[in-house]
Amino acid sequence: MNPNSRRGFIKLAAGSAAGAALWSAAGIPSLAWAKADALAATSLADGIVVISGAGANVLAVRGSEGLLLVDGGLAARSSELLSLALKQTGTRKIHTLFNSHWHPEQTGSNERLGKEGVRIIAHENTRLWLTRKIVTDWLPKGYGPLPAKSLPNKSFYTRESLEFGGETLDYGHLGQAHTDGDLFVYLHNANVLAAGGVVSAQGWPVMDWQTGGWIGGLVGAYDRLLKVANEQTRIVPANGPVLLRKDLQTHRDMYFTIFDRLVKLLVKGQGPEEVVAAKPAQEFEAEWGPSDTFVNAAFKSLWGHYAPDA
Ligand SMILES: [Zn+2]
Image (cartoon, rainbow, N blue to C red):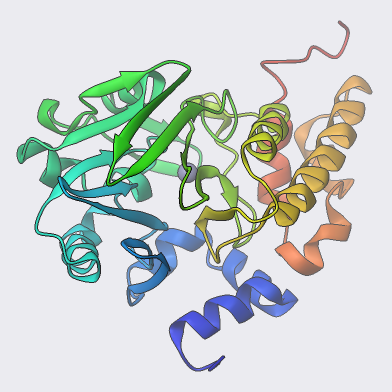
């Protein structure tokens, strides 16, 4: 691996304490890096490519109908991203776009592709979020509403499948996890799983409790993904390098450990500042970077689910 290349750097960054700290120091890592980041394509199989660098990983699947994408990157990178996806797969048009959840890094191609009449698939909760302006702690300027033509035009509630490019794609809701509208997409023949926003391989994720995410649900979403994946499955996270099932298990166990500690602190009647000071994720910081922002949000995410005196 050439550490001077962009991809080499990503792998080094994801695998080292210094790298993890660097990502976290950038604030919102994906947004901060994406603006200056070169796009990179990684082939997973004939006609199946992951493109990184546009704010989130984008999975592109070639079919005779055109191209299917799972997630669309940031709006500012959409044009560049779509050109590269078409070129890398030898296709001429986008046929289908999945939004794995409502965040700007996933829905930045909706406007362009919606106008072209592309099928846009999302969980119904994601569609509903995109119909309004959303302001959260981590996105104080807000996002949306998207124009009517940019909204998902096919939504679902639990689990569905479709045939595309000789593939059977299963897609399903991951419950209230990273947001309340997260989905996965599983490609049976290629044995590739796009995990959406639930899985980050590049530092702590946004725990978006203000749009229905919570840490107990994040653990539950990992349990669902662990049932879909087998030992050979290649798992595409929202950010960072492609993972294996054993990596998901490691993440799941870490989130469960933190969840368990946060519940105990809540039951003791502690508030967010005391909980952050208690450092309940300290042993994971060497790999994942400073955890205070994540812990603060993960703790607040319990409020809708647990009452201290219940
Ligand atoms: Zn997200």
